[in-house]
Image (cartoon, rainbow over all chains, first blue to last red; front, side, top):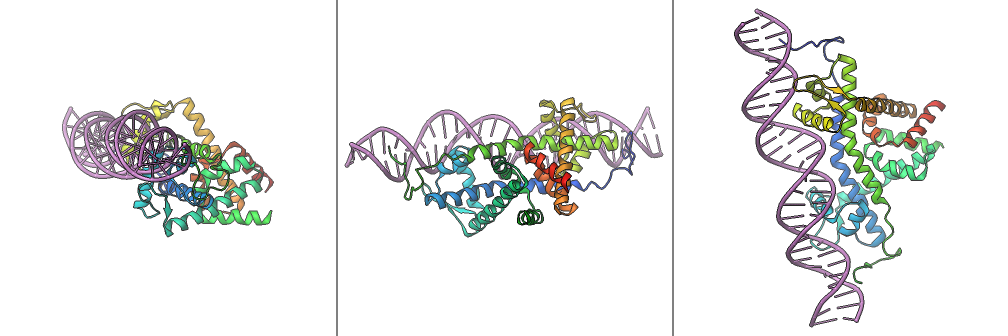
Length: 149
Length: 149
DNA sequence: ATTGAAATGTATCCATAGCTACATAATGGT
DNA sequence: ACCATTATGTAGCTATGGATACATTTCAAT
């Protein structure tokens, strides 16, 4: 049985290597991030303007309308939004629920960072990246901290 | 000039929409995340085993050796690693520097979450996703908090 | 020195996510 | 009612990041 030990194979020849699952989760998350960004934006725009259009989303998310279009098709396929050609975009009940959860979590993360002493600008910026990776347990810890300070 | 106002265009007809830049940054970050995960893994493996091989990285990151291979080619192209066919993988000085920064930041994030009361397991899991999105300002706030508690 | 298992490399496919360029639909002003 | 502008849609390109299937190279045990 060749190729087991390495030049300097100390440490009982290759440890369990738990990290793999960690990275897998981290990657799987990415699939949801886009959906979350979109439903959140759609909810915001609908609240602010009465409806959400492709152009609005493109501006908001900093991509072209083409990218928005294709992504919306995927979101519709996955049951988050419903769209008809040349019409406004609406969230399904499921998409709406996701949007609510996202907004809630987003606000918590921003408030937490600011409570920690991070500037409003940086808090907003960092929250956008961080929020997608905060587990319920960590989110709860954030909330405890906010209440206590 | 048509199509400016909407059905309910309150709020001064489409606000500046700053978020776009936020999302753009958040997306651009992703490009670096892979590089960071890889150089960190390579540094760890080299420290633990004397060298980092494709199989090790595959196991560690939870992907096939094919993915590792292609990613390594990109990392080499971008100057983070140097590889030769059928040989071990080495970090360039630049890659090594990046690995150090990543490990430092990773440990800070984990320690911060644990100080906050998050379990070791969740802290490790969340840190993997969060660490890539923590700005220097927020990282500094994390460090302050750790020292104070 | 041979050789078979493990490691590595290559070909090819899929999905996501961005883009430009071009085509079509809607709509507000006239 | 017309039509120019805007919005939306479609075609086709690139890059990343995942996969399977197959080919080649290494290396340890014999």
